[in-house]
Amino acid sequence: MTFQNTTSLLFERNQLVALQSVKATGMVQGLVLEMTIRQEYQNCTQDNLEASYTFPMGWGASFMDLHVEIAGKRLRGSVIEKQVAIAGYEKAIADGDTPIMLEKNSEGIYTASLGNLKPGEAATIEYRYAQLLQVEEGCARICLPTTIAPRYGKEQFGGIQEHQSTQADMLVQYPLTLSLLLSGGTEKCTIESPSHHIDVTHNTSGTIIELTRDAFLDRDFILSLSGLKNQSFCMAAPDKHMGSEACTVLASFNPNIDNGKFAQPVALKILVDCSGSMNGDSIESAKEALHQVLIS
Picture 1 (cartoon, rainbow, N blue to C red):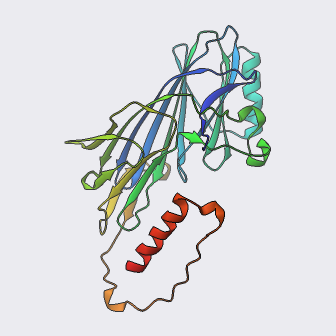
Picture 2: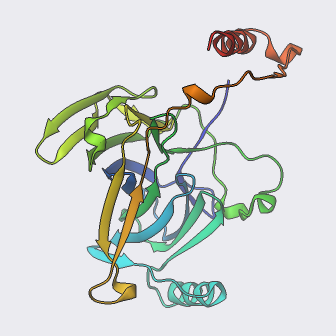
Picture 3: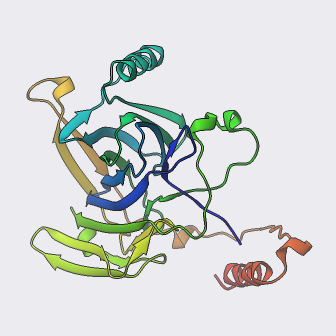
């Protein structure tokens, strides 16, 4: 059995904030995915607490924004030098404020520190990221990570401090809702999800993907988009960094190249692990893969 670590707010006293809900909202325009993850927590203890929130992000994704809502206030982070950020964070806690600090621990793993959460107070953490989808053999794959695999050994070896590590619990059930809009050409592709049951609807804006059953943060959400072979995509957006009238263009070209006339015999060597660890489904899957290679 494989244990998964759910994302959580972890206090220095090893107390957990109750996670109330998780909502993921995203849009795919052409080959660009933009996701907004909103997680709501509540301090159910009788003490003011400082929390560390460790969460995963899609591989190769670019972090764009972070907001925290506390006591009717909406706070937004700014990028500054790390040591300056730490000093400012600690001073804000000492002054009785409620600061947040975001750190990138390793590739795809982030920690947001949240200070002075009052008894009974709710906290909403919302972050946004963008990701460029890759098309291979006419297919693109969207992965929304919701779990952090167990880490073995010392936390610092993975760039994570002890208070930023997560706890494993195979029985915890954190609810997840998701809505994803496909547009810019991807709305016409074939849509499948090997991880969750989904509902697909169409409107004038594009194709909307939603979860049809109660879902939890116990597995990554996977969406497969096929039928993109030989399709090209292009999108443009204003670029304020380059000037008031500048824009950035992202284009993807997939020409139809017929390689049939140039096919040559191939000498192929395949190495398959046949040790005892491959017993059962693993060796059967390897056999099926070899069979598919031979008949193709």
